[in-house]
Length: 438
Image (tube, rainbow, N blue to C red):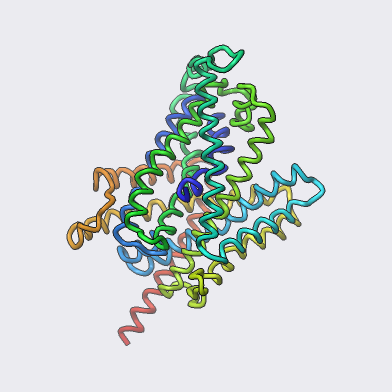
């Protein structure tokens, strides 16, 4: 449930509409390709986390594979990404509730959400898990209901409704109305929708039986995630014409209206609110454990590695929510533009982290097969071929993002930040090496 809760967010409920607008029904190809890529990356994370459990997950693995500079770079990049995402999710949730209670400003809701979930993450890891379980359960129940209603509408088993059939998949310009270029553009939009499942690798390190728990979770979460994502998008483009303006605005609401669900918009807003708060909760946990791991490895201030009596790195939690509380001020000053500004600032960091994960798995898998093959309870399929293929695919996506005028600023910003963090990591390692030599 933690894996599903971290992965199913606004990227599916809202972002899918933008992908459908540029690719038409061909967005199914985009989602399948993005889904397969994310499955491979998550399988790589799972393989290494089962074999080498660590609170720092892929950052600790990168350090083992390439040196402290790599762990430093990957860890800090991921942490920077997540602390901005926290603010984005809190802002998105606040916008929804502000629509219900316009008398209360957006910044006040951001402050409330950040405070409640900060407290939940500081009490005990079990409290985080309890919050995440119920958030995720609501999302899973909603998507399951959506899939059932969609199938009933397609085959004509809803009272008073004729069968919709499959005509919308080929009408209105065909399955690929904008050609393969549209499907490729859709891929660039939806590839980041699958991020967030990596939180399960952090949680595994604090579970009673990391190897067994993570092995089971990885095997089940992957196919369920693909079912929910690809199944939901299939329902959307089958029930409605892809060029319906309502699909681009809010695809899930548009489908529920079409099948006659009363109060569809308010209902989906409640589900979207739960999705955003769930992702906020999961990402706060992941960010705090990443900075805690960096502190343990002397790649961040040592105070961040202190644990409370309940085993919670409270200072790491506070450090991770700092920007979220700064976003309260940003929402107070620029309520109409801060959300998009933060969204653009995240850029392509997630893709850089995925590339690092694949390169790390390629190296450590060979080492584990030589030294401790019994630890490989979860294995990446088709190693090393599929890992190399995933690296090539992610490199291609990064190049295409840089070539696209709309996404180029994000890639440039990510490149500058990556270069700066990498330079600091290399300098730190050289300084340590020279100090040891002296």
